[in-house]
Picture (cartoon, rainbow, N blue to C red):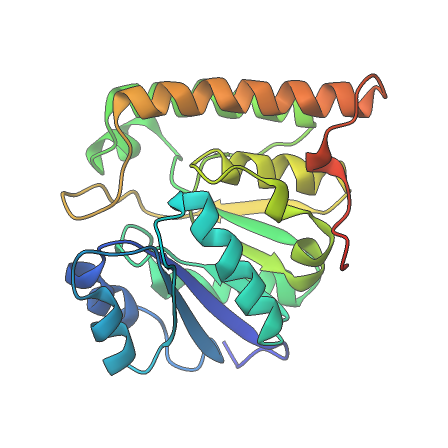
Length: 252
């Protein structure tokens, strides 16, 4: 697969990723991107020093912003860097970076505006890859509900591997989103509301001790926040009550 015509920037929202950063970078195919930006969310380990030694563009938060808050700076810096295609890759090696060119290809050829890595093809594969059963079950139920309400057919609506065309992030007011894990679901809902083309493709399941994950309690809170976001979507679409989530970015 040849080098693609658009400027591709990989962004990494990082928190205590020193142990996995090198392996994540090693899996990225040579020539598949123009720049890698890492935004550190006040890590307590050597993530920043390692990232700088490896030649990454590094930005640091003065205080911990949370998963969603970290992504906000990631996207702003990617847009400032002139990215046409933005790849969000977690530096914990949970997602297979070797597949990046396939995902960016869908964006580059105009097939999709927004791609997700779908970790769930079969129950057996998901559980064999280490996904806890309660996460598998909640993932299935919440994805089904999202698909029905949003009119989509995504295999998984909760993947942290995402690829965007620049125009998606220029239009969506992601600064209005939550600073926690519900940021991801909010962004999917916003993309649907604004008429962008979503798609997904298979990606292996990787759950291991160094990979980031949220607890059962946080997963439950996350699920309730997704339901709240879908409710805001329905109220806005029906013109009953418009949410700021579905405005356009002021500087778009």
